[in-house]
Image 1 (cartoon, rainbow, N blue to C red):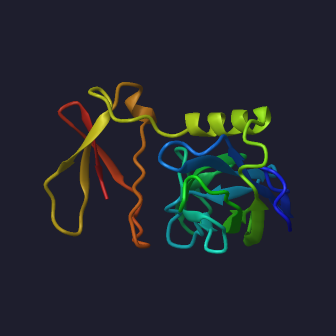
Image 2 (image 1 turned 90 degrees about the vertical axis):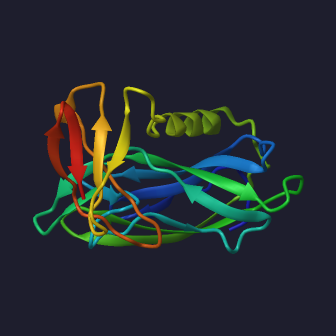
Length: 217
């Protein structure tokens, strides 16, 4: 597939479709912002970055690209799901995952050849695997692409602030204990943990201490 636009074609699967979109020229650090756009059909779900024991997190491999050093996926807050065989984190609605592409040489043209792999589920889960190709420099001022990328970035978790943040409490080497300050309705609060190098966390146990929420993983 030749690179011809800042958005790829849609790749259709049984439970939905996916595409890549980028917007804007590289910033001063040589980064291009984009999204992995996942349009789920009603009743279908896809996974968060730490999906649980049996899930498949979205993955992007840019090793076949030209002048792209790496790509980093970011994730909006997920929801808890229970399919009867286990609990996992993910999304039951269309979702656009922000992607940051870093150029190897910021002043040189780039072509993104991305191998995409993710799982989507209804009553059963199916793998979605495809290659998506785009030229991020072909139409960097596209208004629709810019709006999609901006909206996706706005869904990411907000930075910590004095009335909204977490502190790690002492615990043993096998347990993570986190005290959370939460300004809103505490009953609606949840805590999602993701590790590096494929390490998976369980669903946190929730309690309260001195008016603050405590999550133990």
